[in-house]
Amino acid sequence: MPTKRRGLLASFFLVESVSLTDRVVVVGGGPAGLMAAGRAAEEGAEVLLVEKTARLGNKLRLTGGGRANISHAGDAQATSAHLGSAGPFLSPGLTRFGPRELMAFFNERAMPTAIELDGRVFPKARNAHMVVAALRSWCLAQHVTFRYRSAVNGICVDDGRVTGVAIDALTIGGGAVVLATGGVSYPNTGSTGDGYRLAEGLGHSVVPPAPGLIPLVCSDTWVAGLAGVSLQDVMLEARQGSASLASERGDVLFTSYGLSGPATLNLSSRIGRLFERGAVAIRIDLAPDTDAGALDAALAQRFRMAGRASLGGVMRDMAPGSLTKVIIQLSGADAARPGAEISAIQRGRMAQLLKGLELHAVATRPIQEAMVTLGGVSTCEIDPETMASRLVRGLFFAGELIDIAGDSGGYNLQAAFTSGWLAGMGAARAVREPV
Ligand SMILES: Cc1cc2nc3c(=O)[nH]c(=O)nc-3n(C[C@H](O)[C@H](O)[C@H](O)COP(=O)(O)OP(=O)(O)OC[C@H]3O[C@@H](n4cnc5c(N)ncnc54)[C@H](O)[C@@H]3O)c2cc1C
Image (cartoon, rainbow, N blue to C red):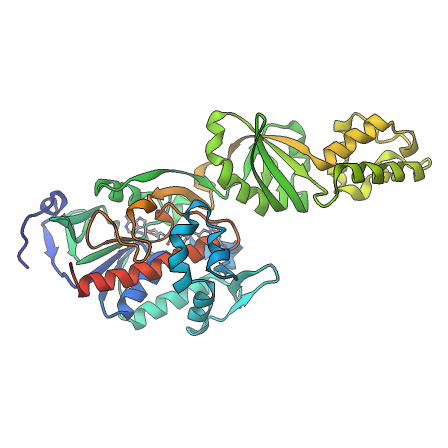
């Protein structure tokens, strides 16, 4: 194939060169890359999927505790509300390939899905390996070729158009390239941020990566004693100085170093970048449906009726045992004292603690432990209808590499599948009808 002008990378990698303008090369064998590859092949393109590791879907196999929470039931609007600032960007895609279409996709490919009471969608077999197997079988049936243990380290561009990818000294030709290399968390799964470097090398802006959906490290010495204690349906509020930064309602888990659990993870994605400015106060409201006055009145009544029963005993069902001890300790009261002898000031202090137990988060856990990477290729430079680069013709993006990060509950895999589906179709069209 004659070329008009060779790009910088193309001229470096000429040792073993194949040039195929009607081939789509997908970089990355995670959920986004697999969906893009199968979809492009279904649209008639010849597709090569290049994966850095020896296995497809390494991270996908870990999701949902090995059960793969692949989506969350709801329409496009409800889903996009859980994708933070990237929600509007992915909305057009979600109306075409949202949770309903994703479930139908897997149901039709021998992987029945089930919706839990809270709306989370899993494979009926609760087995993440089955998701990978279903995607792989579908790709193979569409004649997608896989190349393993191959790290793409360059995108070849000629005259503003993609011409292939480079794997060290080897170039593989392709008229369209889908970059689906994921973020930087859990690097042993293969997601090590290569896509950021490749995209930046082509002039794309990358919002700096930061950890999302990650436990918080707290400086409060009493926290370690609560490790393993879980709280259901509490309200978390994050504050810095007098400013309320974010709030989240749901379940929380105390760990030896701080806080985890779904509500903490969601909150972390909103405050993770703020630790550069200092510690973040996390207030836990253990009784979010009862206002402070009503709670104080309820405590007053309990203490009046308590007789000689100890304060610890009277408070027992207000919170898990070890947390009750901490609350009594922080209020300055004596757990062994009879409940009836507790002063109004101490009672008020306890009501305050139940409505706003304050911890001091000083950091998130390291980004390597994050369930999702915040940041990535700027959505401003990507066409939301096709996931095509607005800067380089024939280049497409999919999955966590893009600046999209969702709440926990299946939103990140849905985003990976939706963007992969769009990118696969866009890439197939790009090789069929090059502009
Ligand atoms: C422990 C854990 C649990 C999670 N649970 C859930 C859940 O239940 N529900 C949910 O919605 N989300 C969950 N997530 C998030 C979800 O797994 C990710 O958002 C999703 O996997 C992103 O898909 P992706 O295809 O964009 O990237 P990845 O899954 O990261 O895949 C990227 C692929 O690209 C390959 N690659 C990287 N660089 C190169 C290169 N240079 N050349 C070739 N290949 C390359 C990698 O080896 C990898 O296979 C979880 C994450 C973790 C870590």
